[in-house]
Length: 331
Image 1 (tube, one colour):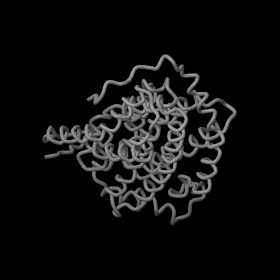
Image 2 (image 1 turned 90 degrees about the vertical axis):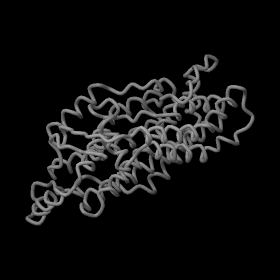
Image 3 (image 1 turned 180 degrees about the vertical axis):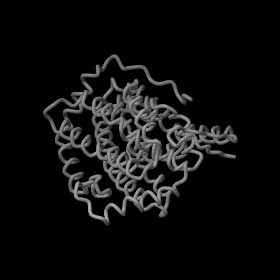
Image 4 (image 1 turned 60 degrees about the vertical axis):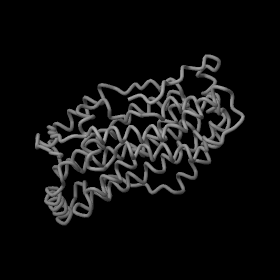
């Protein structure tokens, strides 16, 4: 559902000039990277799951106990983990999209490479967990992941670097919500996956902070075009996993169990509008003012969308090969 007509490209300002604006922010990128590194706690899959050649008996027993605990994980939670896992495995698409504007020898490229390395651990640890715990029909998971990556991810915003940073701000926050809420939904019955998801969510929160700061600085330098770019993205975003098989059905399951849905996205948009102080930006031209007004209307429209979806929600059953076609029923 489209909430607003998206603005047409501004022919007076070619994309190259927006890339030049990003170049002006390189000193700030270094500051943000330093702040990020000072807060970062680097972890790896092997910190959670024994994987060495010389595992001792205790480590081998830990894997057996994990498989026993995993039997108690609800199928709806398995769907959520699967959706999160395959979404994370789409990382190559995002590295490509962000690298397009950042060059090869700058702090921008250093950030992108570091961000990619950090993000790569997310799909890796979830995949290791799924395999070691026997959480899924693993061959189906692999087929879904392959189909997703082969399909590609080519959004219409990838030609505009400003839109890239609006999208990554919202997407990182949404991913943080999904991981954290999945862990909370599973609860303490399986503490290992809850801990893994908590660590991933903490990473996503730090990445969100970086991208949010980038767009705030873009707004300060080039507010009119930045607001138009924000308006092109914020009414609704497609999560990167949209190209995977059964994405919409899996997303409907996690909405129905309260992990992530339209009301969460509304909170994310409200938070971004407030942090960027969209409502009080002044000195705008006509196009900037129109974009500003429409941006401030988005939360109200998102509330209407959430109510519409909730009213149209009816009883439904789902089944996924990922979990051996077991039936999930919702009244």
